[in-house]
Length: 170
Length: 301
Image (cartoon, rainbow over all chains, first blue to last red; front, side, top):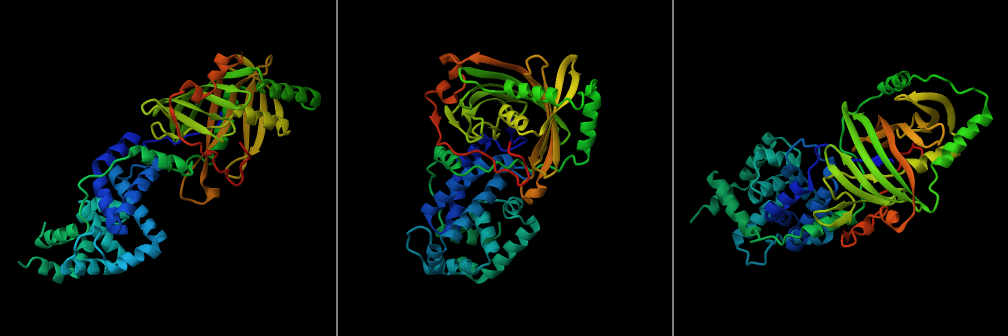
């Protein structure tokens, strides 16, 4: 019999399912921040995990399973953004908050400022604040070094300084 | 956290608040995974072998001690050997082929042995068990032409590709491949020898490998029944992410046929060839083609 096997220390289904059950809320939140659509975000998460399940044999354990899954979720969300560009560009241009809540002027400004940030800065922000990942995990998820993550976040803080200082006003 | 961190987190929280909970649907994830086309890429591996293959092949020849070169020029005798070997590999209707195989190879220097027990019917459907050190015992099934290759997951009571332990098994059928190779004239009878003290006839099979270079495999058959005894074959593993013609590396493997017998095609024996019939209550994922894309240079396997 000819056999093609994928062997090695691949991520097990149990391991992947464990991450899915423990952190789906965070995955969904980051995906929502990227695609600006709650329903699409859930679809992104489900699709991303399907990809992870399919490709688990190729996981080489050069980082944690979590970071690898984060990378897949971010890639899937960015791809969704690309393929749905016509619709999502409209949403991004309006910078609506993801939920249908009344947007305050300061939130609208923050959304504007975020939209102006380069893609990498935005992704670092989402992974830092929505997923609560440390610099190393963000680095693995985005394929950059922890030092670059730190300097990117510094850049974000500088870019948003005025707005954040206002946020601190009573 | 600095003050700015806190402020930014607070503002971001308003923009994209966390959902109170996520409606988990793991079955949906598995369903999506099954319904997409399966890439059969192997895990990334270090490139192995190269010139070592020739050394290994030579060493194998010495170890086997090929004692009696086949009489050259005896075309009739050679045709008879190849014809009988081909006939011995047939899957006649009314029978179920039962095989126990042991595969041994070194991948990246790590010796590995996989044992397999299979039942095949004359339509080319099979079911069986694979036992390998990492994943353990996996029940597999499908068709020998690789159009379908599935596993049974006892925990989920489900049948589908790649369900167990992250290992994807796609079984083709060496029996069918060998028959074709013998029929197409690429084989030569190559003398008699012994393996573990047992007399065998050696058949040399030439083909083009996945790395676009010639490959020579050896099939050893019983001199009386012409049933296969051992198959020394060059397997190929690939690295993902590189150009197709550079992705394959060679893994010399030894496949021992510990059992090769034909059983009568009774309803009970035929049932052994169908994974669905053995698990009638299992959820069956929609069939997907699991036939791996052939590398540009490889002989069809």
